[in-house]
Length: 110
Image (cartoon, rainbow, N blue to C red; front, side, top):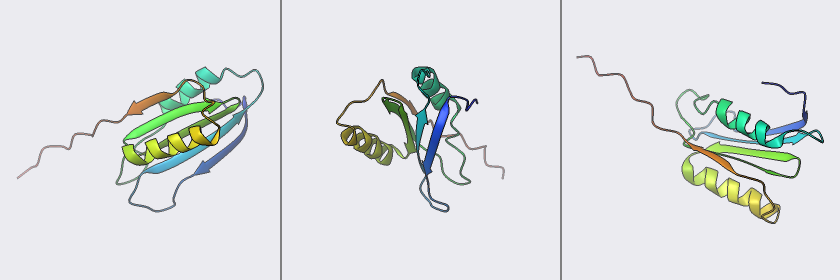
C-alpha cells in the first residue's frame, strides 16, 4: 500500500501460463519495519490475479533487508521458498505463510 520504504522490487512471473506463479524480491530502506511489511504483503497479495488459476500457497520471509515472497501451487511455492532459504544459507527471518482455500463454484443451473 505504501512504497516509501522500498528501494528496489524484482518480480518474476510468466506472461501466460496454466500455472499460478509469482516470485517477488523487495529491497527495503534501512530502518524499515520489515515484519510489518511482510505481514502487509501476505495480507494484500492477490492469489487470484490470474484469469483461470489461483496460487495455493504463499510464503513471505526475508534475509536482512530483502523480503522474498513466492506464491504458486503448494509444491512449487515450497521449492522456491526452500531455494531462497538455501541460497542465503538459511539466514532467514520469520516466515509467514498462507494456504488458499478453493473458491466455491456457484450452483449449477439446469
